[in-house]
Image 1 (cartoon, rainbow, N blue to C red):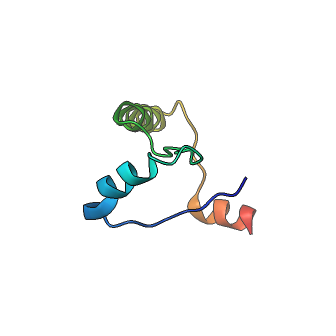
Image 2: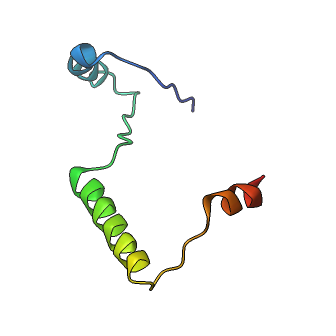
Length: 70
């Protein structure tokens, strides 16, 4: 099976989506997070930030992190 990634202008996306749904040999994979997943991710980020502020979570200096990955 082959995969193809397309970039479609927002104004034409709805039309294109309806068009390809008429082909039974095409499977559409939605690869974006739901609103709930995005909000949950943001909430977890704020919780981590609070943990850092309260000294419960240790951070790594940015320069040290970059040195480690290079």
